[in-house]
Length: 273
Image 1 (cartoon, one colour):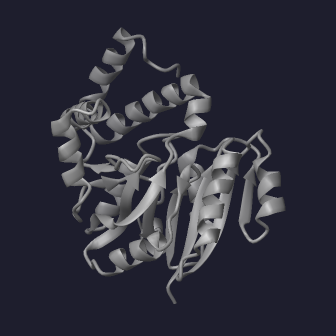
Image 2 (image 1 turned 120 degrees about the horizontal axis):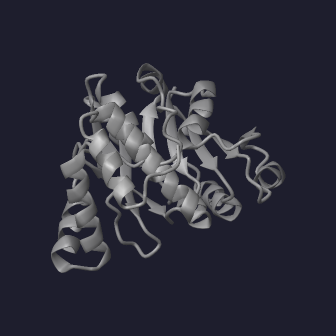
């Protein structure tokens, strides 16, 4: 039986989470589904709001902030459905998006995971996929992103082309990522050394090591309101990003890790141990 567990990790994003849940409830997917919210010790009343307003949603309330990877892993281990969908709390899911994503993954026997086109509240597509992170790919991706954010015509046109075609990048964003539960377990789940950021790229690398590809499909579209919990704690999330970046390079590019550390130290951006 085709069924999906939608896993949403929340940290002090009660309003965004409730909007996300409301978007799913307004147009439920046809595929059999259940929703699990993993709350990372929010102080904004999220667990109480879920219990009161969303009694059908399974709530896993952690007594501490586990980070994105470990919180998702809790729910994946408990899922008894064929698929799991990692979904950010700051997303809105239009009618048909989950069903379309499931069909896309099922129709591509070479694919192990799938991600939709993510768009902002203004409808502009995000760069939500890319090549494996490394020194040069990261520079190129960031440069494209900066030009795109500034509205440079060539960058806008390129992103429009990239996000309009179905293809197989090395990774898709963990803001909305569909994978079979068995494959997530076979890949070893998300690496919990990443508290926040880079865990989706690493997870996709582990999934690709199973011998299949990652699928990006523009046929499914999800609205991503971008980093609600991160905006609330910019300094902490900045440090988390750098820690994850260092961990990623130490794991995947160990020869570059000392150079990255030296670069961050010179910029005063090396996070405390």
